[in-house]
Image 1 (cartoon, rainbow, N blue to C red):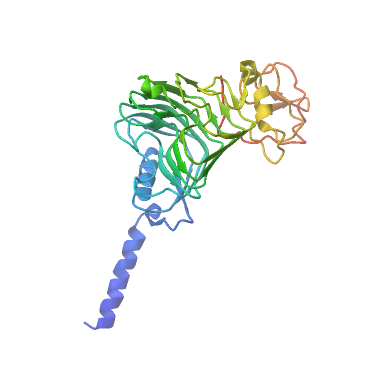
Image 2: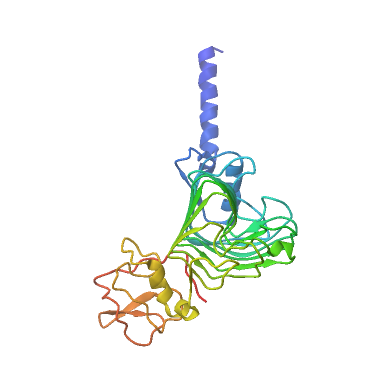
Length: 332
């Protein structure tokens, strides 16, 4: 057989193999986005990242991992992609017994962006630090519109064991925009109660928080911080302190009647971060019993809230269309 014929046949065989490969497995150039719509997709994404692929991702459905521990990122390399939860929830019920196991994202490197993600459920550890969202930060990282609603229970007999969002900012700058922690930090040992962080447990870099809320509970001991050590906070609030008070004390009734959403929106008109309408004319209704004012129907030309029995003074639906609320929807 001629050499030319052999080469042509080999080429055809390779081409057939490429066509037979699942489309999802062909991704990985770093410019494409991996879609996560199921538990199996989450596992596959973890495997791809573990194997060195730099791949952005977006969630298109809520994911419940149950007791199966699948973590994004490798112990030996940084995750540096963009992850968009698109307002969906990742639910976990984990019991972990080793370092770099007790959070959904392991080590985040320079350029990472995680946004619109809500994490809820429970993480329990006997001997290692745990956090609601991420482990170690090394580089410039941004979290936007993220919610940690996780019950964290730790029997570790060392400090820095519990963190609402991030375990450790090792170096670099971490920015939290419009994020919420509303879970529980529960240390079993006296030593474990020391140096908790409502948002960040151990802080050795730069931590900036804009329009964030700590609404969780804790049994923090000495050396603990409501947001983070040396945190630079702008328009941030807390319902209950986690050790040292930082930011502004929130009034509980304002969490229920919607006033707090107006404060956290902070007069921004470029987008609706904490309220349904992005216009400065929107004001919270005193009868609303949720953190967010949800406009869902129009009566006599005026938008009406889902929790108010009377017409509200909000602008007409014809002048401002409602937006999809961000992931950080709270009820207290």
